[in-house]
Amino acid sequence: MEAYIRGLIPNLAQLRDMLGAFVQMYCRIAAPKFFFFFYPNRRGKACIKKVLLSHCLQELMELHQESDEEVTDTEHEQVENWFSMTSAQRVYHMFLALDKDMNRTLSKQELREYAAVTLTDIFIERVKN
Image 1 (tube, rainbow, N blue to C red):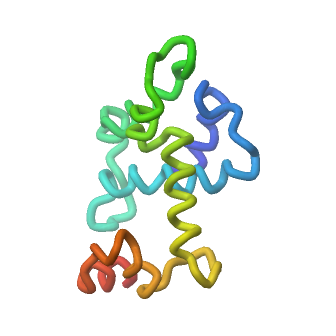
Image 2 (cartoon, helix red, strand yellow; image 1 turned 30 degrees about the horizontal axis):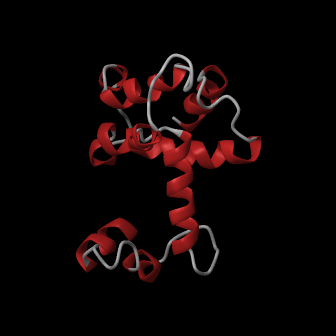
């Protein structure tokens, strides 16, 4: 999925000017949304038909439109698109703020600090296992 998204970036008007150093991180942020919805029970496969007909793919494809010329999106609406550059940068900065030991992963303790301790211990245990 990351390779597919990486291949789309040059064709998506709102992403084509992305710095090369951020492309890999962008793909790592964008791909999990597909896996969350289309990779049930970690079976090792996703239904391509469901992915192609999904709202997720439609949202990603919205980035084909020129941000200033063809679309009258406000910055707020761009943030609502999970795949927008604004959203990806926000997620990345949140991750960096949580990754206190800077090892590029979040420990259980670092995860507990997310959004003023809104995640339960049970959730954290399941995510980290």
